[in-house]
Length: 336
Image 1 (cartoon, rainbow, N blue to C red):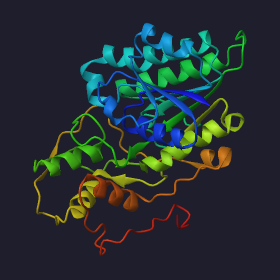
Image 2: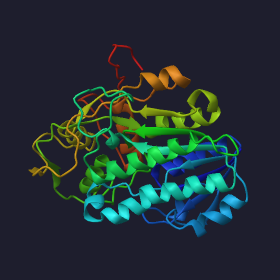
Image 3: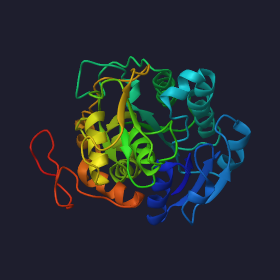
C-alpha cells in the first residue's frame, strides 16, 4: 500500500514506519520536527517537512494519492496543554480535522487515528472498556477525544462520495527503545531515564501510587499493522491498546533504578504536589482488541523495561533477579 504517516519522525511513528517498510509498503512521513528529527526516519521512507495545522503542507502529499493514512502527529504533553491550550487545540483537534479533510478531498479510503487513554478521564471502572463514557479532565484529553469524534462522525456521514474506513486506537502508556529521555514533557519512563543518565534527582508528582498501563512499542505496532491488514474487522471501531496490567509510578521508579544497579534509598527521589489533569487509576480492558482482530500484547513490562534499558546504555536486574528477563502473567494467570 501507499501509506502516509503523520508524525512519522516521532517515537511511535518511526517504529511504525520501519515495520511498514519491512512489509513492502511505500511510506511518506510528514513531520514538523517539533519533538523529533528527520534523521530518525527509517531509510526507505520519504520525508516531507510539514505541519498538520497547515492544510497547504498536507495538500501536495495527499494529492499524490494514498491507500491509507496513519495519523500520529500531535501535541503529546498534558502539562504543555495546560500552559498553551490554544496550541494544543490547534495541533490535536484542528490538525486532525485538516487530515480528515485532506482524506475526503483526495478520497483516501483508510484512516487510523492515534487517540489516547486520557479520553476516559478519572473513571471508577478499572480495567476500563471502550464502552465507558469519556469525561476527560485534562485539556490534552479533551482535544484528543474531540478529534476522535471528528474522525468517526466524518466516516459516518451519509453524503460521502466514497467509503471512508476509520479506526481509533486509545493508546495507553507506550514505552520502549527510541523513547525520548531528554524531553521533560513526554512519557514518565523517558523522564526517569533522562534524570538518571544526567545524575539528576527524580521527582514524583503526587504520592506515586497512581497507576499507569505501560505497553511495549512492538505490541503497539502490531496493533496498527493488524488494523491495516484487517480493515473490515476494525472499521468504525474505537479500540484500547494497553497491556491490561497496572503499575504504580513508585513501582516504575524502583524498577528503573534497579535496572541501573541502584538500590532502594541510594538515589534522590522526592515527591511534589499532584499536577492537574492526571488520572489516578489507569488500566486498559483489552478484550475488544483480542476479539476484533486477534491483537494480544506479547511483551511483559519487565522484558520491555530491560529492552529499553539495554537500548539506553545498559541494564541490571529487574525484580531482584540475576538479569534474565521475566515472564509476566495477565489477569487470568496465563503466561505471555
